[in-house]
Image (tube, rainbow, N blue to C red; front, side, top):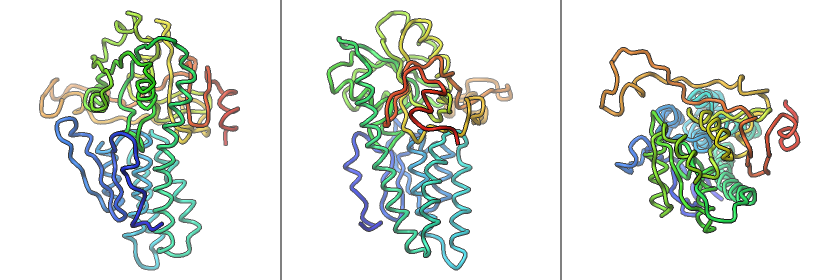
Length: 357
């Protein structure tokens, strides 16, 4: 299989966030959804890094896949006897684009391992393209496997409602979705009553992306303000809160979009079960707990403004962490493609994923 002739992207399930063309990568600009479906074409590693940093592409699995394609572009653009050093410099730029999502670093490690085995740039370009495409395909397969594992855990006999936070669908992954993949599978099985979607301030991924994906697929969706989640859970219709993750540590703590921690607290109080769905590439067994996870802080304009609309005084201080950490004791079920961890803790995590390195 030539790197110029990758598997057809049409084989993906659901909306796609990226399209690989062999010598360039197209990214669906998620900053402009749902108003405009605009594709950004990038053909250098630095442009891929900028797209990750600037939120053109987001979602931990999609970030990792995009970075892998960015390495391929780095090799294709490198030249001269120092081509390997140039590629590694580009990989460092990719690594610095977002600090929290471990999938980014995992994907770069996979690419680095292949790069180290290639004596020539031509061989590296071919093998790394195959590797990146393989990571893309593997992520889709993992999403489908996680959906099946999750359905086996959800033992409600009648259709029920779920609540989700941020976007974990095809836009955030290689296709189908993690938490949203579970929701898609529930709907296909006739077991879903309704999805409540937090709007997810300040980037509004729930309202702009998740509601868009679900409505396109004909899945019953109700959008709500983040602050309405407690009242929704109190009504008793929601049986599960289902979310994704950007990094999961050796003790089962989970970093995810800001607001996830408060949802876990609310779910425990209202006796609603809390499920985290993420591929094994999100597991970071090198970190003992969530206290070790670097939490990305973004600039205050994202909170003070919405687009060009000013919401707050220009110079007011803003606290804008992108993620928070949900303690493992608040998580009922952790679902990966490798299996399910009930009530995650260090022992349960080690049993499925191995000891900390």
